[in-house]
Image (cartoon, rainbow, N blue to C red; front, side):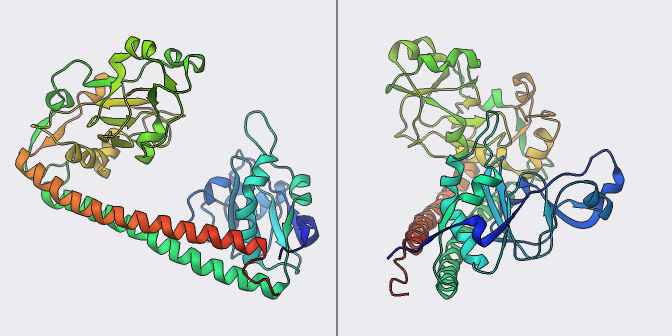
Length: 402
């Protein structure tokens, strides 16, 4: 049984936002919640209460933003489309939102999940050359299934339970990551302060003594899309370093191009590091089963001498907060963050404890990672369960008799 479809404008008031002038200090640091799309980018809860930035009454009156009541649905309509949250306090937004204020025929929890379910459809309706935006008229005419209010509440309650289970399982991953970082600090101490007095070395000292063991990707012009083929040697991208996912394969080059660019070859056991953007410095170890290929312009490849420094020790050292703050701070680019010049990177001091201690650390870390892997499998199950429930909910399969 499917539910009747209604246009969003029939059940919600759709509210735009705006931004006070940044030039007038009297408009800022007030008491009025004022949200931007980035404020919703990494939410783990479906609710928001306090905005990072607030505006004054003068700021509110100076622009065309509109106050919406608690219980409204903040929905980003550009850069990107589809960040979403329910505000628990009165608030306003910048121009990147089409906030939905329910009129009474729709339960806010149900509306939240409906918009999450149909965001891909709304994204497909976005327009714009630089970035996609979905217009107020488009949102107004977009249709969603609408069962009776009591059924809406039951659907929202079931999805809340499933989502809470999903989020609880995800939180375990963070605990395993914290445990691993704590183990590193217990065994080796802060790598910047070096309280245990370990020997310091530069990357050139513990990289494998062979050509290309420290290699930045080629200039962007060397990998134009016209050279890519349907299958062949893989072009490794930032995605691989960010997600540690080596099943992903998008761009390939043929054998002739590979031989031409062999200096950028990636092999199992190499470390790849993201060199630009907000995920600067994310890294991953190339697994044994990885496809032959090369790095693109956004990556750095390292091949370490495992008798001096193990891959696992390096990755945890590199990820340490104090180390990253010291060498990858805000100075790494005024606009898009960028990796430091290679001549600077090659001077970074790394602590190098005895290899036996590093290997002991690796053994312990593998145990933690195995537990983490089992949790990741459980997360996939919870994701599948949630996706199945949300699909059934909006197809009318959860409560077919109502």
